Image 1 (cartoon, rainbow, N blue to C red):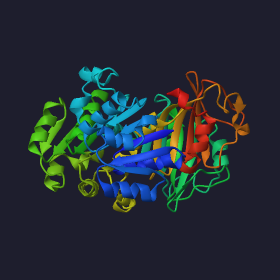
Image 2: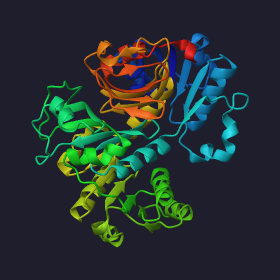
Image 3: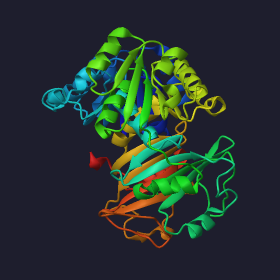
Image 4: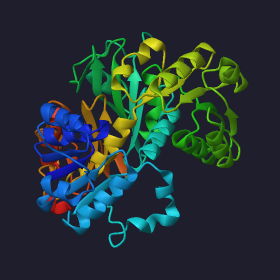
Length: 458
């Protein structure tokens, strides 16, 4: 597949890294020659320097025979015009645009992106993706990562194993025997900074970070098995009243009358805007690092604090201060992957990576075959992939034990009709089934082959 990626920032670079690593023909376009140089020197991609919305620049990038264009520059307007030029001048079939401004995403104006108006096939909103990720973290407070799959019927849980975890030093095969009615599978383990797909004989140790794929009905029991307490988050303090904080507060208001949220926002105009958009949520204008203001927000009695300002260091410091003041759960939005390794040492329970959530969302629409969801894990080290099995797929009609999955791939669950099945060796994969797979990055191309990759899908 030939793909043009417009924008060589963090998101564009990661998308290019994924797709070029899977033997796609990738060209990166950016007006910053240094970013283009970084991409071409570190990745197997071509590079073009210039404004992505200019037809002659897209011509140089090979738009005449491109299958897809991904517009992920820092400008919404450039992304929109780029898709228009890609459609009108070059007839590119698939067009994806990242749009940040919420004004472009008001449902009443949804017809704007029709093919005969502004032809964008998929609109990605980083703020909405991050807000969705924040809500998932709050819904599973004892996890460091979380993602929903199979239309909400299953959930990926990232769990840090403490010393009092009751299943330490137990082979995974034995766990399956001990908890035979538990629909949960350990699909990934990070130990000593290395993420891998475990074997049935592998044991779990204190300090391991494990990814467990569980049916929704068994999430609470799964957490208990791994030594985590289950507590509803009914009092939440949100530091940062921008698009992300506002979206989370609005969603919490809709979810339950019992949830009481408070928002702290430093910018007065933004605080007033947030207050106008909320009904039951108290909005405080001030610095989220101010301990007096945090205490006014009753941080010591809150169930969780969510720090989602536009500054990583502020978010981390707010999380640390809130924990010191007595808040049991701290979640911080962190853009810089280099900062993530500091979070456990600082006592921060979970983090949200805007880049990873945006990349996951874009990849969901880039993958070939009937891919329905993708969740990027770690620093793009692995993926959780949800896809429908096509009749032409090598998977169709075969038992799991007879399928030649790579070592870095594990099946988390199979959806047959409305029923989620915990996979066993003798589970048969049929056409139309939806399968959830954990795959290390190097094994994704083989997974796509097994899912019967074809450009004809587009």
